[in-house]
Image 1 (cartoon, rainbow, N blue to C red):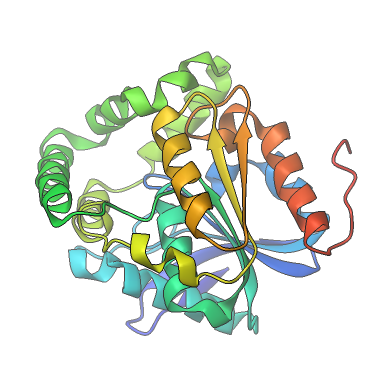
Image 2 (image 1 turned 90 degrees about the horizontal axis):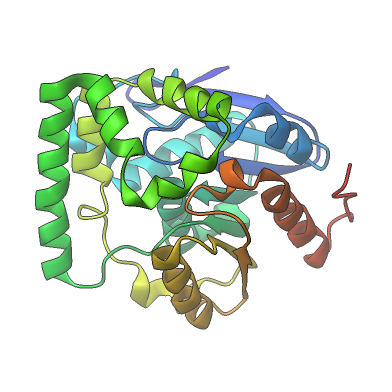
Amino acid sequence: MFVTMRDNLRLNVRIQGAGEPLLLIHGFTGSSLAWGEDLISGLARAHQVVAVDLLGHGESDISPHPERYQVDEMLTDLGQVLDALAIEEARWLGYSMGGRIALAGAVRTPSRLSSLILESASPGLAGEGERKARRRADEALAEGILRGGMEDFVDHWMGLPLFATQGKLPPKVRARTRELKLRNSPEALAACLRGMGTGAQPSFWDSLTAIQVPTLLLAGEEDRKFTLVAEQMADSIPRAELRIMPRAGHAIHLENPFAWLAAVRTFDFVNGWNQPNVES
């Protein structure tokens, strides 16, 4: 289904299952399809899964304006999606950029969250100098997308050291991942980098202690950078649980989906939900 935003742009939303709502927020270049049907079906046994295509991604509409991709705009979009579905609060689960958005939601719109699950996410860069340097890098990458087109960009993106562990994926899975990324628009991804890149995002490091909902932090054992970030976050978020996931790098849900699903569903149990059969 499509949900129309305040400015008449539409977001594509996929809904499956019944039960407590679970909002899935994908990463940069991703979409609601990037989670995979098996994971969505597994989560839908206990939840009403609400998987959103963020603005400029998947089948959602595109804006060429970077300011439309800023974090507060993204949060307003997600709030409108929940309102359209008559959902007052939900579990928010975000991966990478989606994790940064979910974390921002816990800080800025806490009444919409019942709990928080962050996969390979960060609160942003702490120092203005770091953010300024990252904005320059994101701007260069945005220009590169517009000049070179999607195929060159996707090949570059998937070849980054951050995603090196995905080289071990079955060829069909890797090909499917590439194909989904290629569906995006270079203009939209460039605008998203400029508006919601790590350099553009404000730092939420000083706000972590104010997050009161139960929080699950997931990091892949082969992704040392984000494991260190998750460890630091776990020290600051009052009700945080950290799980380092085996045989996975940055995209845990893609590289070790069974362990990812088991972690998410057992976190439900720990927080008082019906215990799932994680082997089913």
